Image (cartoon, rainbow, N blue to C red):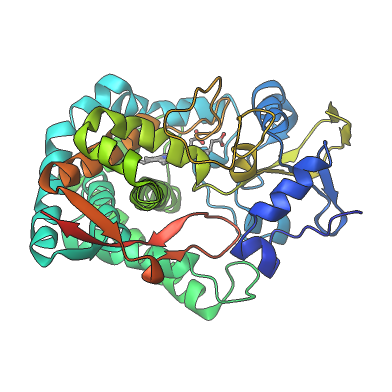
Length: 395
Ligand code: HEM
């Protein structure tokens, strides 16, 4: 029986995993006529498309399902450039995100985590996502741009508003989304004016891109504002969801929970397995520019491709007992951060940050319980995972 898959359907936005399982069982990419798009749901297909066919696709048509399938405006930054331009603009801040580069931030980030955590421990109950992980990553993203704490928090609130989906809403066109997008862009446009007028105010990522000159090209005001917006989003969106998921999934198995609480070296395994099991980047998209064959699908120029990471990471052909959360599992390959030239730039920072957040928490408590009935998952086409995980801690 053919599957009626629409990434914007209620079913797909609420709980897509049963759909993904059915799509993988088809054994090849699934064509969606309505969007002239191929959904890649198998691990091998996403990996092969990412690594063997990068030259056959363009990133310039956007990366989100809304941009590719609904024609929403493309957020222009290096994330939506093709090689070789992409490599050069990404390269401007690449060194900040290498394993050595992120080490420079360990102490500051740990301090930040401790400051946010301390009053939460006194309260005894808090939401891992909103009160803790999102706060820390949001302040960290703001720091990278040179924003004050209150500016960082208000930008993050606007990003949440932009990404909010009402039940049944298709795309990001609601008044609520648009109002937040306008407010955020106005703030960033003013910020860019401010640093242009007084370049001494530009620090870190903002300074790097303010002065960047690639083949004689410099960013204009709008390009700089969009690039900064991109960093605010990617730096504070997915990792807090993974941290919330780590606490949630770990609590489902008391024995494993006690092992991790007593041996913090396992936190990294917990992080990696949570990224796999509850991949926060549900999907990203590209558009084909050349014809190519992919495991039984003949892809034509102009067709859209959905790289569904959250499905690939549950593929039984790649992961034994893929639907079981097992921090001790053996892995051959990884797709959680994507693959190919656009592979996640922030992967080392995300891993280090998540490890710090959870180990700082576990150093301070002897146990915790998840307030299950208050937990909430994301709803929408783009993100996947826990957005509310309240916990009660025992010191
Ligand atoms: C500090 C946190 C993070 C930062 C700063 C960050 C930054 C970025 C950036 C800048 C890109 C675009 C790279 C490019 O186009 O060249 C990217 C892509 C991506 N990131 Fe992250 N990221 C973070 C956390 C995460 C996490 C936790 C995950 C999932 C586990 C993730 C998954 C991805 C994926 C799947 C891509 C797309 C790769 C592709 O297109 O092939 N990121 N990230």
